[in-house]
Image 1 (spheres, one colour):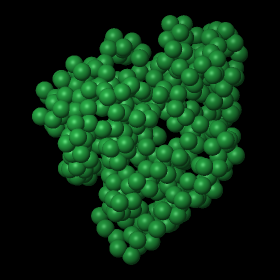
Image 2 (tube, rainbow, N blue to C red):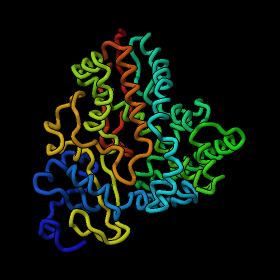
Image 3 (cartoon, rainbow, N blue to C red):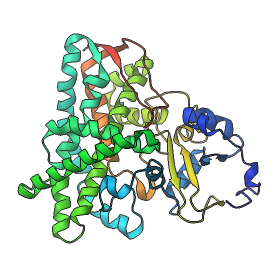
Image 4 (cartoon, rainbow, N blue to C red):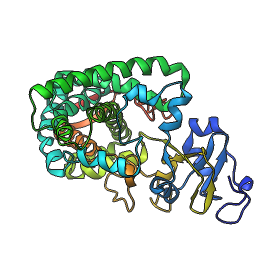
Length: 403
């Protein structure tokens, strides 16, 4: 790292934060650092604590997704885990554009919206037993059972495979912990996910349709990508598509349980569902810390970043930045964000499935608000901020009063 920061201070004069505390409570760290600096030092790398700083980090072409570094720290070979083909998270430049061009053909607003009626019906079926019983565990009964079938519809697979996709996604996301103790379980889930992907490719070869998997295979036939690319891209999307969305749904309902006035606002005006999705993601982001690294010397807002330096974006800290979100500790489903919440990233690595995830979450909130007049916790409402894969809701027991 260079000797001086962007504002002329010696880099070693930047605030220093304890790495353990950063992972345990990134919001508290951001609140302490932000009045003094947009960036701090830690034993695990630089820590960016402002919304503007995180946006600049995400848009910086000299900083690459941290999974490149985290997997080897677990003793995992990225090529062995996802296969030898290219994927979006590990590619840059023309290679990234080439891969993204093929898969983005499916992710149009029209196609995503076409799935919303299916999602509504799915959520309606899943909440029906809770409605009849007057309650249940929202995570087990609903949240974990929505994203799997939706992604199966997207790739043209039988939705009965949804539970299998979810279970594998839940394990594979633990790769972001860089914990060697979890390496064997991640590796085993990787083998199972590759087997599932090969099954789906074989099925679509025999019976192509109007779905994402068929579009990718069409890209192979057109010489745009290889079959190994299809395997790696499918592995990547199936891994990321379900657990994150399920946990985001659980966090949203947990927040609404904690704030009955905001639930009432949503019940009275279901048109607020889109704003509610964004506000829930701001207040309880699934992604709390997001790492990138410098493959070569680069600069970030005038600060020199040395080769192999890790830069941790404090996403939850950015979401409580009063420069961007006035009165940030107020949870308000009517809030209109001046700047986007950062769960889906921005720039060249902006989450390809962001529109799909937003639609799922919006439709879920619209549907439950359509069916339930009141909701109440039936136990402690816990959002675990230090879960290995991000903010998580382990269980959500609740009661409901139908309309």
